[in-house]
Image (cartoon, rainbow, N blue to C red):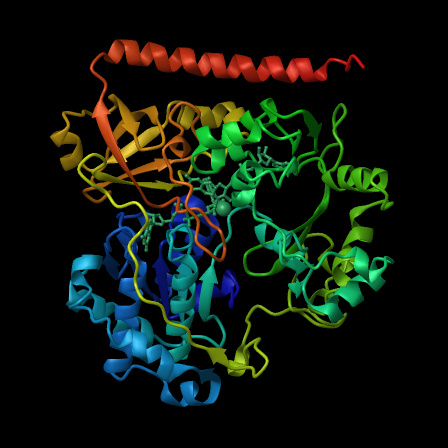
Length: 569
Ligand SMILES: Nc1nc2c(c(=O)[nH]1)N[C@H]1C(S)=C(S)[C@@H](COP(=O)(O)OP(=O)(O)OC[C@H]3O[C@@H](n4cnc5c(=O)[nH]c(N)nc54)[C@H](O)[C@@H]3O)O[C@H]1N2
Ligand SMILES: Nc1nc2c(c(=O)[nH]1)N[C@H]1C(S)=C(S)[C@@H](COP(=O)(O)OP(=O)(O)OC[C@H]3O[C@@H](n4cnc5c(=O)[nH]c(N)nc54)[C@H](O)[C@@H]3O)O[C@H]1N2
Ligand SMILES: [Mo]
C-alpha cells in the first residue's frame, strides 16, 4: 500500500474496486465509515451490492470479469475531460504517449456492452475520484487479483492514480489489501519465488553475493533460479519435475482450484509433508504431519498490508509435540546440512530482516515492545517509520518516475454458454476463514454457518429453476458436481452465483477452473461457468449431506489418531 490504513480516514475519496472490507477486513471497513463521517466520497465498483455500497456516494455494478474495459474507459474520461494533472505527469511520469494509444480506444460508450455501466455514471465516478481533495485512494482486493487480467488491472489502477496525482502525497494512492494477517510479512521475508528478504532479486549477482556473505555460504550455493508458485505444483508433479512437497500452513485440497484433479496429482508424490496447527484435508493425505504452534502459542512479528510491523507475544505455552514453525524449519535445515541454531525470534528478525534489508533496519524489537509498531521504510534507529510512500512523486524506479503501462481487454477464459449458463464467483463470508480449519474448530462460529454452506443466487435465476430459499441444490461445472444450499439474495447480480470456499461438502473448488495468468500464476477464482439445479428429493439430500459430513469428520479424526501412534519402524 502507498498509504497507511489509519490514514484512509483522512482521504477525500475512497474508491473500492473488487474489495469487500465489511466481510473481509471489518477494521478497515470501520476506517471507511469514519472517512465517510469526515466527509470523504465513497465509490464502490463491484458486481454485487456489497455492504459498503449502502454508504457509497456512487455504486457501479460492473459485470463480472470486465475490470480492464471499465478501468480503461475510466482513464479515458480522466484524460479527455481534462482531469489529468499535466504538471505532475510531465515531472513524475513516463510512457504517457504509448499508454494513451491503448486507452484512447476505450470510451464509456463503446465499453458499455462489456461493463454494463451507464456511461454517465462512469463519467461521474471518474470526476469524483480525480477531483477529490486532499487525496483519493483506490482500494482493491480479490475482485482484481483473482481474474485472468489481474496484473493488468493493477497496472491500470496505478496509472489512474499517477495521471491524476492522487498518489505521491499523504493518504493517497493504491491500497491493495492482503489476506492473512502476515501475507505482507511472508513476502517481506522472502517467501516469494523471485526474492530474498526485502524484495531483493534472486537473479542479481551483487545481491546474491550480499546474501552469501550474510549467510556464510559460498555464492554458488545460492540458486539464481526463480522458484515455482503454489499453483504450479499440480502440473510439475504431472511433468515428473516434482517429487517432494513440504506444505507449510496451507490446505491446498480445500483452497486450490479443481481440487479433484489436484488430489490425484498429490497422490503421485514420493513424499508429502504438512506443517499445520489443525488436521486438514491436506494433512489427511500427507505422509508426515509436523504439528506447529498457533499464534497464541508463539511470538514473532506480523506485517499488516500497510507495511506495519507489529510484535506479538505468546499467550500460552505449546502443548504436546508441537513446535514453532521456525524450530521445525531450523531442524529440517540442520539435518539437511545447513545448521541453523536460533534461540528466539529476535535473533531471526535481526539476522534475516534488519541486517539484510536497509528499509527495515530501524525496526527493532525494542521499538515494537508493548503495543508499539514500526512501519517500513524505517531505515535508521531514530526513524519513526513511513505511513506514506512516494511522497513528492518520487517512485521506486531507477529514474524515480512512474511508468504507465496499458493493456487491451480480454474476456475471462471460460465464458458461460448453453450448458453452463451461470458465472461462478467465489468470495468470502464473515463467519469463516479461508480453509476453515481454524474457524470450523470453533463451536460458536459453527452456529453462524454450517455444512454444506451456501450459494447466493439472484431471485430471478432461482425462480427460473424452481429453487426456493434453503433448498439443497446441485452445482456443477466441467470439473465436478457438489451439493450446496440456496440463499436467494437480491444483492447479487443476475447470471452469477456466489459461493465461499470453506465448505467440505459444498466445496466450490471442485467446480473452479485451474487456469492462471502468465505472470503471478494466480488462479481465476472469480470466474468460471456453472449450472445449478434443485435436488428433487430434499429429504434424501439433507440426509446425504449429513452423512457425507460425518464421514469426512470421522476420517480426519481417524487419521489424526493413527498419526499419533508411534511409528512401527
Ligand atoms: N471472514 C473472512 N475474512 C477474510 C477471509 C475469509 O476467508 N473470511 N479471507 C482473507 C483473505 S485470504 C483475503 S485475500 C481477503 C480478500 O478480501 P476481498 O478482496 O474482499 O475478497 P473477496 O470477497 O473474495 O472479493 C472481493 C470482491 O470482489 C468482487 N468481484 C468479483 N468479480 C469482480 C470483478 O470482475 N470486478 C470487480 N470490480 N469486483 C469483482 C466480489 O463481488 C467481492 O465483493 O480477505 C481476508 N479476510
Ligand atoms: N475458490 C476460491 N479459492 C480460493 C480463494 C477464493 O477467493 N476462491 N482465495 C485464495 C486466497 S486469496 C487464499 S490466501 C487462499 C487461502 O488458503 P489457505 O492458505 O489454504 O487457507 P488458510 O485457512 O488461510 O490457512 C491454511 C492453514 O494454515 C494453518 N495455520 C494457521 N496458523 C498457522 C501457523 O502458525 N503455522 C502453521 N504451520 N500453520 C498454521 C491453518 O490451520 C490452515 O490449515 O485460498 C485461496 N483459494
Ligand atoms: Mo488471500
